[in-house]
Length: 178
Image 1 (tube, rainbow, N blue to C red):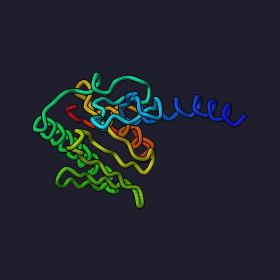
Image 2: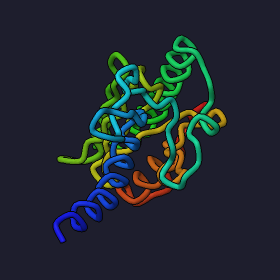
Image 3: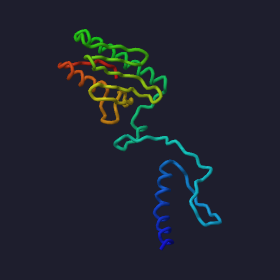
Image 4: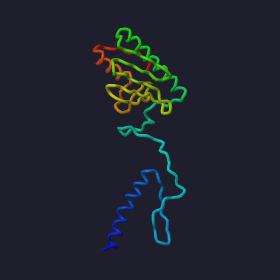
């Protein structure tokens, strides 16, 4: 009875353990030892970094985002943030409650007391991040020349326009190059 329990346990536990460690990036090999066959971690194996990422809907992110160099990213992101800042400052002339400040790749946009947006560059992953008092945090990748979030395929400019329309109760036009 005990022997049968051990056999069944090995049949159940070993595949689960192999699957768990394989998912974590380990490589296994079967080795014969004096005690019989057992599954051992291959000593030459290393944990390998995965060089791909999948979006929430299963698409490969590398296939979606624009492939640009670090310097191109900096130029595109800086131009976008400056255009957006200029457009929002223009809007601030008609709506004095709007306050915009852009410093070293970080933009703060206050539309009402307690309602501040923060939009900033993320050079390591070539993204622009948004912290919105209405919709929360979002990350935007450059896709087809526009800053788009992979969560719901919304453009950063469109989301800002929509939220500012609701907050200011009027139609807002943002003129931004991309």
